[in-house]
Amino acid sequence: MNIIWIMVLLLSCIVSILYNPGLAVIAMTQGANDAVKLSISLVAIYGLWLGMLNIMDKLGVSQKIAWILQPIIKFLFGKDISEESKKYVSLNISANFLGLGNAATPMGISAVQSMGAQRKTASTNMIMLTVISATSLQLLPTTVIGMRINHNSSDPTSFLLPSIIATVVSTFVGVLLVKILSKIFKEKPI
Amino acid sequence: MQFTVYIIPALFIFILCLSIVKKQNAYLSFVEGAGQALNLMFKVFPYLLAVMIAVEVFRQTGISAKIANFVSPAFNFIGIPPQLTELILIRPLSGAGAMAILDNIYATYGTDTYIGKAASLIYGSSETIFYVATIYFSQSKVKNLRYAIPVAIIATIIGVIVGCWILKVW
Image (spheres, rainbow over the protein chains, first blue to last red):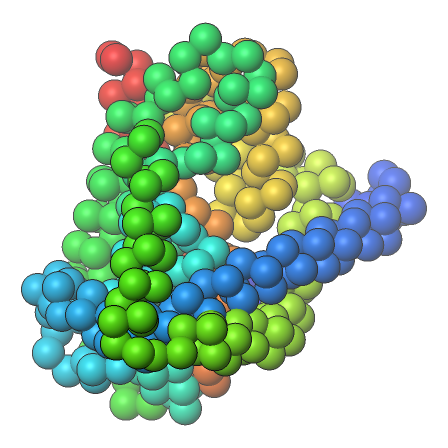
């Protein structure tokens, strides 16, 4: 992440100095501004879902969801996954599946923590979780449909089926690659 | 489209009724859980800021467009229209940035052309991979994600290629 970040910034600043020296600061400030705006709306979304999640936890509902998703979790993450991780992972997967990507985020963070917050390198299960979330099955891309409606599309959902096939393919390929690579590169102890 | 609209309220009704049956204080549980939101954002915010600053300057200086021009012949070869390369480059980095590009594509090519539909597919079927990876690990000490990001990117691109092919014969 460090190298990517430095390269992106370095390249941008060099280009900016050559062509348009004022632009770099303006663009960066705008990026920072967007980050603040995004985080305020994220606090709202996290608050809503963490609140609901806590009710579900206290009632034992989240444990039930984990139990229902048991076969999928077992296939993806193997047997050495703690009950706590199982719970967060299954909530993360169900939220992603429902198109609630932002509600899935706090559960993803908790899942990574429960898999070993002291580790320096990601475990295979952490990688699996990241890949599943990053290629997540989205059944209903509401943002895109809304934008198409705004642009007077004659059929706003016409791309939907190929799009769903694309996300299924990407999740399938992602899981397959993690399964293969975890056999080739052995897990690091810490 | 109707299906998911019902799930969330139905889930809430179920949870609230269950809390009455089980005589649990749902209100206090909610407040306790929601209280973690600010703490969480305190930890996540600097990562968010770092990523979004870099992406914005990357986009506004026109580097992403230049890189897009450079790699578009390769994308064209595998069946992705060259007009969509910048969208594919920015999508894993920033949702807001990709949205601006998508908006631009709709305005230029229309929503119902092949390019408009393929752009919808690219945005709709993929995620902000770097954001997910950064935020998920923001509260752990993990600094080395090993092959997580390359796998996610390769898988997404394969999905998009397949999607674009299907869209063509649709």
